[in-house]
Image 1 (cartoon, rainbow, N blue to C red):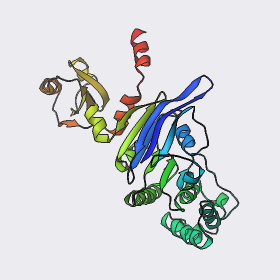
Image 2 (image 1 turned 60 degrees about the vertical axis):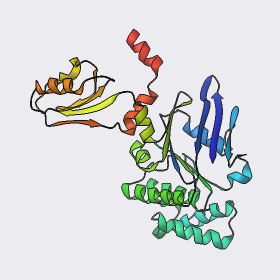
Image 3 (image 1 turned 45 degrees about the vertical axis):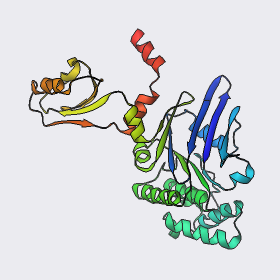
Image 4 (image 1 turned 90 degrees about the vertical axis):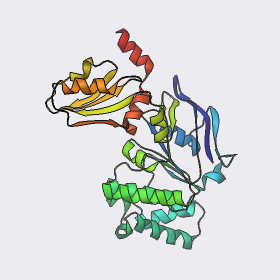
Length: 306
């Protein structure tokens, strides 16, 4: 088990992490989500010994992470840590050797991962000659090449085209099938929802929601109802008791219904405006769950007071 336990970290008066805790089981993928500046990168840097926590610790199999354990972790930083003039194949081999692999094993692993991530034809090119997306692939290969016991990846899908996204997703799922716990941060919440066994949402220095996407949906108090009335005037649902308009575009309206609200009353209101072509409950996406989780009640109270 990979455990992040009670991490606290401040930069001056700004408390970035305030008791951050979560755990990732072997053979599972954890999506670490949060707005810019929420503290995701700081959490990962603490795990890798690149920043020091003021309290709390990170453990692998019950043992606090030290340099010996960290050599068995595949880490991808948000900022690329590559040598621009070194050739792709040589660079990936070099990172494998840093993790303790012998020359022969490092060379074979380098060849394997350049092929798997679509870099086989670029092995002899200097990194600086690659596109940003291909440089991202090199960084990923460097994290995967040493056959790590744990993967910690900061925005690994950033800059990748759809083919690159699919290649990386399959590589990560392969690691999970081999029992490796994977933690990755991303703003691409559709990918998090598709790939991850569990999700943690970080806001204001704390984990404000955690669990599977299904568990997060179950904890949502409101219910989402999609109603399509092509000829309905804008704002038609604004006066329906217990219904809040989440989005509205060209007659396609998404409503959040408070507990106890009668959906038939919503249907009757919709029919008064025109022909209803779609009326169905819809599960909230991870994007919608994220927005609800990171909303700051203090900000909302201030807006209401204003």
